[in-house]
Length: 214
Image 1 (cartoon, rainbow, N blue to C red):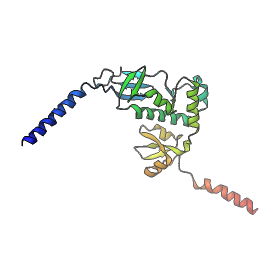
Image 2 (tube, rainbow, N blue to C red; image 1 turned 180 degrees about the horizontal axis):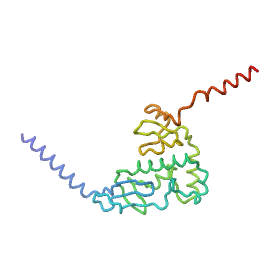
Image 3 (spheres, helix red, strand yellow; image 1 turned 120 degrees about the vertical axis):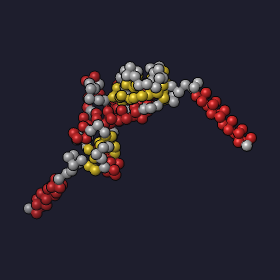
Image 4 (tube, helix red, strand yellow; image 1 turned 60 degrees about the vertical axis):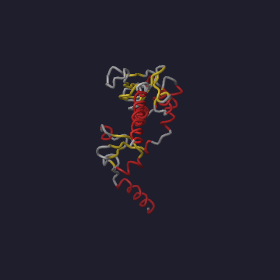
């Protein structure tokens, strides 16, 4: 009995020490929301209450979106509409993966996650860019190296997948961009943008055969 009581006492002491120590550990500030890669809402006063007056804004980090004026970035003027759509999604997704619900520290106008710079990690993805031509060129080279035909818009509610230029796919509020091979395993194609009439494939063959016979 004495041994059991001693073990309980030791356990309580260890628990008490851990709780007390946690009060002195600086975990940093919690990220409440990633509005976009350049605007992050952080619990700056550590009261665990979301406050719209607590955004951390990056003036030197830019991402492609519908409001981006490409006249200011001549290198990126050759981006297609589908490439812009893809880049916007991937930039926001990358920012969320880095910061959402994480505890971070603020230093030198940057956010740090476990001593890693948010700005540096985000720029490495080449889905965003800064004010330098080098960064803009890297983003352009990156998106041009990606075959967008390998990706589709997956509506997570209807379980339908769409091409990037499909109006129905873009209107959805619940979607994600995934590999076409992945979408085929869990969803069905949109009849508007993926269904190809049989005659479109057969007609050229028929014409070709007739020409050969003549």
